[in-house]
Amino acid sequence: MRSKQRYLCKACGLNFTDTPARGKPLAMKATAVLLYVSGLSMNRTAKLLGVSTPTIQAWLEQFAAAYAQKPEPEGRAVVIELDEMWHYVKKSPSRSGSGRLGIVLHGSWWTGNAAFVTRLPASA
Image (tube, rainbow, N blue to C red; front, top):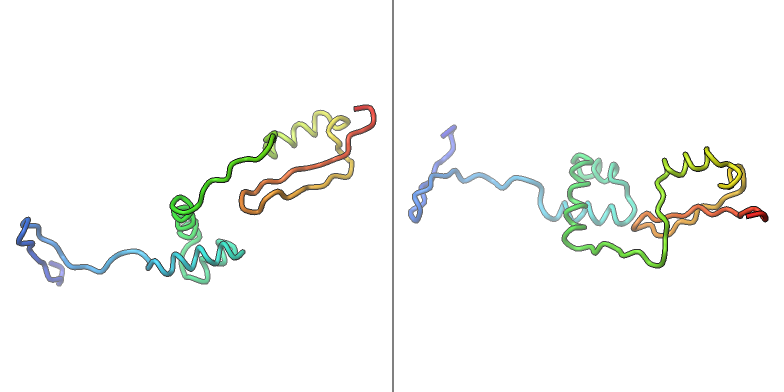
């Protein structure tokens, strides 16, 4: 069939063509994960390995699902999205510290946690 040898399974009678396996080798996937965890961006990793960035992302997600535990939050935290924070600051600049010096504390590079800290006015 299409100049390929066809085979017949004696056990079940299935006709098939012996074709090479599809996809990239496991060693390349492991290299991608190692490069990314070492600090290389997904775009650069993809370029080095000659695959697309979504492919690298899929490999990382598969690796994380199989081997990494989702971190549990420690202590009490209030989660606010950047868009929500922008609207809050815009509506009440005197209460939110708008225009004051602020510090962004980076919690964990693995989970992407961060906090914005500003000094409250004495009247608060």
